[in-house]
Length: 458
Image 1: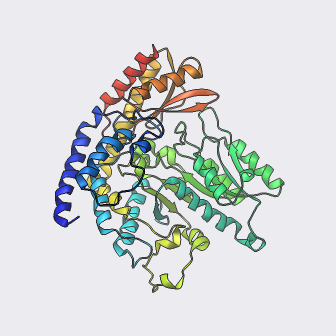
Image 2: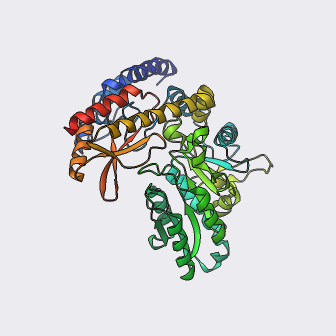
């Protein structure tokens, strides 16, 4: 493709995206496709000769788009809603054009230093101390895995001569994201050394149960390595009592990693600061701008209070990557299992500058207000019941009745294509999750979806 062709197709592509954003409400959120249908519609073999761009784009519209779940839809209320804003999209275009690989400082000086500066701004917005060093990864799963690597290095350094520290234990809530256990498994802790602590009536980690588990493990010769509470746990957005858990972590010498992947941006709001009490004393914190802060996938931020624990565990410099030393020089390869890294900070920088702290805070408040409105509607309809407190933008509710009835209700609203909800199971009950978080979502979107749920409930 020549630059002239690129210019022409680029203008066409931007126009296509603009039309898509303007008309996205007219599209289905979930596609009407069966497993294998998209695959079968594609050629069995790759093309031998070049194909015109117009034909490729036509196939995208006729085959790929109809088979796509539209995460950037204003009525995508499943999982945790995400946004890809125009500012973030344009930054990705520039990132692709420059195509930097931030292995070392010299392989991407602007990439490295913009990441440091932008994460410094974000750290201030979140109210975290200056000692926290930030790194951008692709997802919270990878951020949490790196936090566990640092925890193992910090806690078990003296056991390394005798091989893998098989007696190290990781503690998290039964409500925690599966990435905590998956990371522990990947790092060799073993499933037998992952403790899933029971939760209380509001689905928060039970501190007394955590204390008992730690005491039992220590009596059995186990060593607490990491404790992972959540602020905004995935199933119900529960807020674990981080400050109380911190006291236990310090008493037993465990690393404290706070998972605030979804709720982290809410730290910008004064009225939500109570949820984050104690996280400034943690050893590491993860939050995802790709979830509720207007940045498209992928962009997850890990803050480390003790960055040397991570670099000490995985820093490795072969001769071909050796560079000069400078007190201001950062090589991000020293803080990542992966060597290559994209220019993710660019889109975060574009978004933070385009919206400002006030603009992002206003959006968060509006989403929280929508959730509170929906909670009131659920409580006003005697056919339904609330299941969990609504602290943020997630509403967990169910139709009074069997699990099968609630499964059918969710399936019906999703099959309509009008909206997309997900579920959790709490205390044996099937629960609908209505997660608000897209930058285009309006109160009308929420109200119309609720009306359809009511109608489908019969």
